Image (cartoon, rainbow, N blue to C red):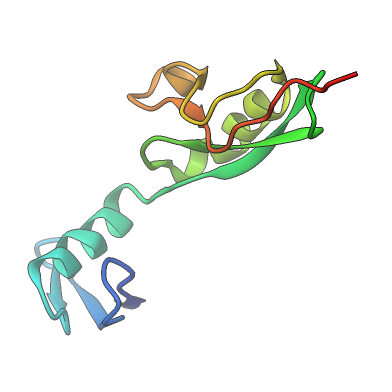
Length: 123
């Protein structure tokens, strides 16, 4: 079986091919411009991960939403559950960029942090 990937690790965007050796159940990886391309494709084959960015509501803020993001990529299959947890969260102003919104998301070595600041609404 042959799979092709466009590497996203650097701006080169190499077209990397992974071909499965059916006898040994291993992949031969070709077309990469650097070792990072090999690592990227191996990760995609065995444990694909993605970064997540979204917004959460803010009470009493000068903006109704704050951008948040994960501190490291999470398994692709856990994204729906992660999004449910993140969207269930509501922050109270003030919010500062870098504040931890959810510690250890889904028990992973990953936090959800505020990606922007939201000031308290002035009356």
